[in-house]
Picture 1: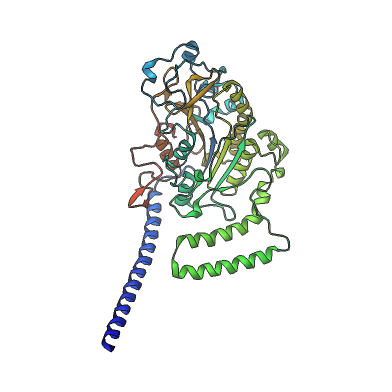
Picture 2: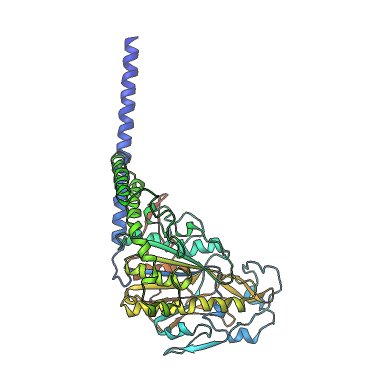
Length: 469
């Protein structure tokens, strides 16, 4: 009996030693994996850095290139005539599938601006006044044709939710320059048309990267962050003591668990405490000079796209690495003529002001501005006055941080249906963005499920060098 008990005891000890050995090995693997990821990120930062930060202007809903930045006189000539079947046969169309397709002329005139007399819609004269700072890419394409997957693709390089957003990738690769603000901030605004096109927090998620790199949404109207203020009866000193105690417990636990999410939790508690002091003052644009408010055409607390553009400049000054603005109400399935008129009133002056303000402060040279939707609209009519979703030709524009201004890259065909010259993909755009940030897109990876994942995708992608100085 004693012999049997001894054998069982030895077996338990052996099992315990094996478990502890495997556990120690697991902690070691976690540490090595973390180190490997850090080294990979460092090795990718081998290029000259032209951009220190990115301001990404997202026009949610799908802005039409045909009423904004891609003139198509031939489409105007063919207004009301059948769309050539040679272009559309067998092609993916969102809501016009199986219907008779008719050409639909651009609904607003175009005008020439700048030294190179670039044509854009005449509704954007303010943007035209700074067009020599802007590069238009008229040959952009995307893989998705419905809103949510298209937003995911533009933000993460994949239509499938769960991948890191570009803002998360950038802050992971470069870190944050701000001590009391997140490295990645998101602001949203709604246009006059009232189309509250859904957007979701997964579009600025950190995905499989540590959660400290996810975007933090600040509200341009009302309290900038919910529950930011201390509860009644709780002083800032008491709050600081609470956070120090909580983080001490987290640090103690992390010595055992070695979990990167615990480190994230510690950092986020400290950041949240700092934000209680920094964010309210930052979001109060009434501190700006009257001439600056006039430049943007905004009022303190109005929550407009113009105010968010001004906040983007303030965030950039404070060291935020990636700032993403969403302006909704671009989903013009009907009455696109009036819809684009309203959108132009909302963004034309603000975009000009952002470029002008950054340039006056010497910040445009190291700030990359990108303007893009999730897709564009068809050259065929929908319901007689609108346009359907379209992914084969769209226009985006860039400014600052080593981008050639006053130029057009690529083109779509004469009806604006498909990109035909210097065809460009979302992955190419991401690769170019990383390049200007000093990061090699093809070596900037993160091991996930046994694969080297990257923002610029696994299929071939390339930096758009023709648009760079």
